[in-house]
Image (cartoon, rainbow, N blue to C red; front, top):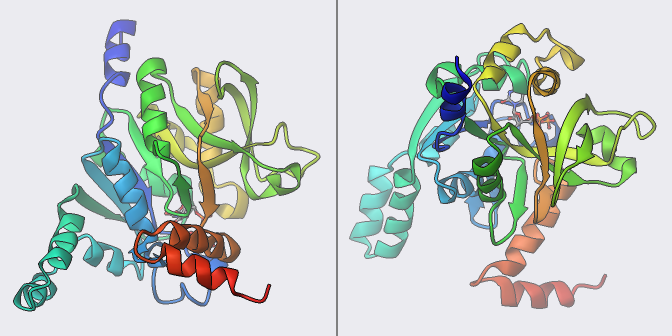
Length: 298
Ligand code: UTP
């Protein structure tokens, strides 16, 4: 392929997003024994709805959700619920009915079943045929990022300029690096880093930086070939990090320090923090909730 053709291919609008949601959610057991982690409600919406709304707000039209056993509630959530809508209509609750209809009208939803939870890399690889030959976004439902310009919007804006794979990163305390993939990189401009290498869950000593990979990516289709070649790594899973390491060798790949407050909502404490913050921001509940918190004997 010529450089011009390659440029055209990568420069396409990003209209597809993959949301891997087939993980086992072991950090949130027993809540996630029979219901998906992605359906845990943050105030009044399931986690995955925040992420879908972020994607749609950034121009995504097709959402590909990777699901697994016990995840049917996700499909039902984004489907039309005729019975419920009809009952609400009959009871005159039209606003509520409209708000439900909006959830299923937001985008085109496709579901792919990952038959075994063989890792994040394996989950993304299963979207290969639906993505085809264009750049795409990946959003992890665990990461709820709060900022007036959404995390994905920030990344898409940057991708339009650089047309190179882009990984969302944030600075974390050195003591926490072992929970993340960490990049080895050189600072470029304004929160942008050129990635040389990545290390999955390093010890603070081994970590090449304190720049941790968080759950937003813009990837180019060559990631699929690399994932196909990736052997199972840590925990016998096909690790996205291993394929990204290869991608960084092949072409320029960047990390971008996402602006905004991030919550790891797949972790119990992170989820509680997100609930409190979102509760305080909620226009209907915020005032009373703030008063309740203030009155607590802390
Ligand atoms: P996590 O590492 O958070 O895994 O995966 P998990 O299983 O969901 O949660 P814990 O760690 O056991 O509590 C990161 C993302 O990748 C998806 C998860 O659903 C999550 O969004 N994933 C992971 C898959 O879709 N398939 C997999 O095989 C593994």
